[in-house]
Length: 60
Image (cartoon, rainbow, N blue to C red):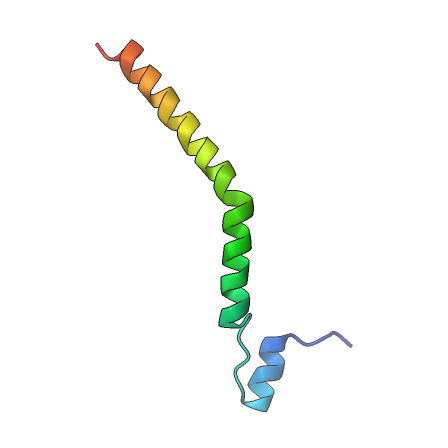
């Protein structure tokens, strides 16, 4: 017998169970920003630098 999902179980019981609570969501968002934010910033800086070089050298 397959295991039933939380969505199926909550539909049967008539109660809504969210994927994560607001507190868990904000905690996840904070951790994500601390872990991934600096990497995204580095990518953005590198893209801006390459676009600047492209504008300076390839614009006629």
